[in-house]
Picture 1 (cartoon, helix red, strand yellow):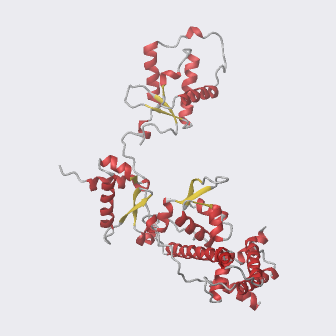
Picture 2: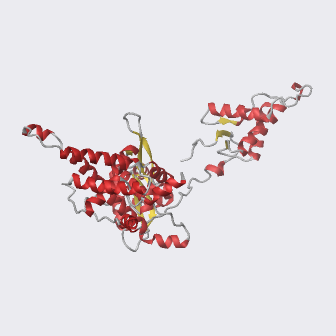
Picture 3: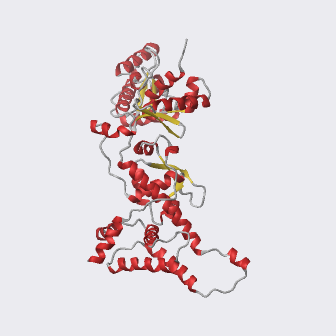
Length: 248
Length: 188
């Protein structure tokens, strides 16, 4: 693999069969509109043979072009039959297509050279990231842990503290935080415009509330969700992180 | 109150930075028609061309942004803002030129013009964010279409795609590298 690519680099003087042909045309001072097929084919084959003798890795594209040229050469060597002029007109000069392709390639080769010059001249221009104008938008508006605790308190004020009597006995790990996190994410997924803090605390047992609260903190920390409060003492909204809500 | 649309425009584009603003957006904010925005921008562009000015207006698919001027690239680099890039290979340059002038275009079409495979070159160009995918061509196999990016403009210091030099026929070839290669073969 490495040996192969090493050989390949050596013939990088040419970018491919088209490039080699253009080179031959220029060296032989041939008019691109009137290519002597026999001559150009011989010259082309000579290069291929040289590469071959040196056991260079000849890209298959070169061989395809070689075959095309040889086919063209052999057709020109065939004795020309007298054909009626109408038929002659419809028959296309096989050189035509090659000429068009060469001319097309030459244009882009030139354009590539111009780009190369521009690159070498060091013309790069610079800009910078946009400024964030919206005051209080984005990160600034993110609710803090204290906002979240306040929200919890407000909820208790409205609905009363969680009833401890519901809890009986020891229920260890009944709701592992990981599961609650998934649960919250699921709920948020269903409401892309955000979900209120209160809606997340459906059940009223203390364990569950603590669990939900911790899961929420964990999600905020992981940057999976975003907790926002537009005004102080207003409802807290939980969003899926990465969604575009109210920004721009 | 003499509210200057141009002043607002200038501030907007300054704040928008590299993201720039589309002329549609600008027309909404300034509450003027899009062609009026274009006129304003055109005048301003001319004004900025004054050698005494240090910023330039760039346009990419209807989005305008402010950049530094290409003639001072070396100065900004020296200041340490950006480091030098590795120069593009001939294969990459050819592929890039083809994409720039014929966009959107598929890889197979680029291959055909160059007469060789260009997948490696395209990969490099995509990695360097000079080209990007531009949907699919509605033919057999729905091949990926490529186009140049905004970074292509900034990298070469072009003001817009129209700023690309005209695709010309005439050119002077430089085959010295290839000649040397074959000369050295004959000698050996």
